[in-house]
Length: 85
Image 1 (cartoon, rainbow, N blue to C red):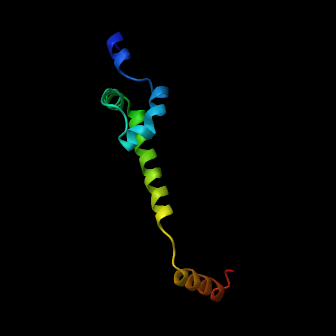
Image 2 (cartoon, rainbow, N blue to C red):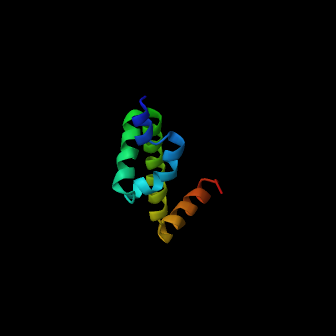
């Protein structure tokens, strides 16, 4: 890679410092440009970002789901009936 490219693109280790800000859309435009440029050139970081987004989404879904008392009672009764408690 040319020295200009090295000056413009963040290395993988630096990129991870900006991951949350990137996902939240709070990076300034220049940093976002450099982040996106790195992602276009680095399949490893693209895969890492995709996995990180999936995990973050799954965690947010888990936090949003609060089972009702009826569901908890019905589940407990079922488990007791099946001898699993």
